[in-house]
Image 1: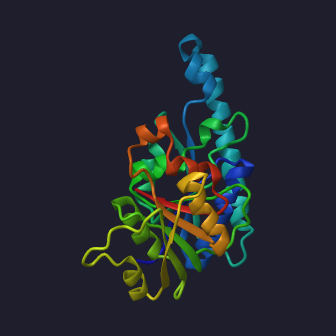
Image 2: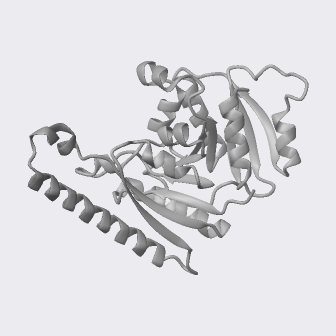
Image 3: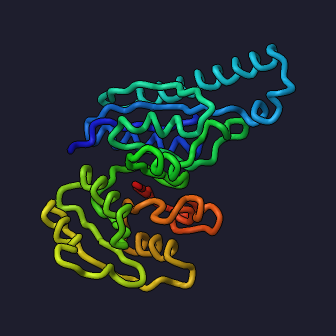
Amino acid sequence: MALKSILAAYSGDAEGSKGLALALVLARAHDAHLTGVVWRGPSPVESRFRGYMTKDVLDMLSRREAEAATEIRAGFDTRVAAEPGGIAASFIDLENTSEFSLSKCAQTYDLVVMGSRAAAVGREHMAARPDVVALRSGRPVILTPHEYTPRNLGSKVVFAWDGKRAAARAIGDAITFLAPGADVTVLSVGTAPNGNVGDDMVGMLRRHGMNAKALVRAAGADGVSQTLLDVCKDLGADMMVMGAYEHSKFREDILGGVTQDILERAHLPVLMSH
């Protein structure tokens, strides 16, 4: 399946603009349609004080939100118009009180590209979590770190492989837009998954034309997450692919885990699927 429909979640802030920049690169490389979306949950002021506000105050807040969304759309349109050769694009203003409305929207796209969750002051409620979108939408999501120079992806990739369902899903999602003959490292931290009949991820990737190899690396003192990122840096990878929340999100929110660590530390684009 070709990559033909990309959703770029964009809140107009500097950090999120790296996600839009990468989405533009991918749309041009794959001749894909790009849809920008701004998600608007309730503002912090409205969430906290709505019960004390008059209708006039609520209407004023609504107008300000609409003006901000219009400004964000204008920024998106300007970025798209500046692309050489032109890109087919559209924009959605997704106003909803539920964080998962963006995830629902994402279900009808091949890929979602997002920047860092951090947003400009006053626009925090216009930024959603990439891991939540991956978890709720069933679609692959690429997180783009804010200190990143966007370029085409898929020539040198690290697959974080633990033999579990979410990782297998992520690898299947990523194959659709990897470059022919891509260098792919199937990385297992600690020990490789138990080998069973047909358990041959490297062989499957080679049949797809990839230059694939397996690598097992012991977990370093800073844990599995940092080991994954260190290997990506050592190999010069342009993307890491991983499953999101093999354990429950609730558990990771309370105790921490690989997904949360990668969201905070990643220096390169990370494709997550659940």
